[in-house]
Length: 88
Image (cartoon, rainbow, N blue to C red; front, side, top):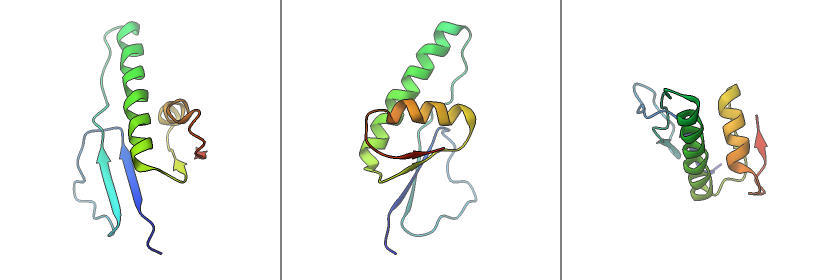
């Protein structure tokens, strides 16, 4: 139907052997990071939220779909106040 689809991946892994249809853009954000303590975990999560929010704005999404417990929470926080529906 001519709709653009943008996939935002928390990982930094590339497309691999996955073939995406024309009109689908994959953005691998490279946001996976281990934390050696709880403070670093908080810093990592705040960074993920900030970067994800920036990319949600850039994508100008009509709707956001999120999959996975941790990713759902991060996405809901990142999209807060953006007036974009989030489906988890």
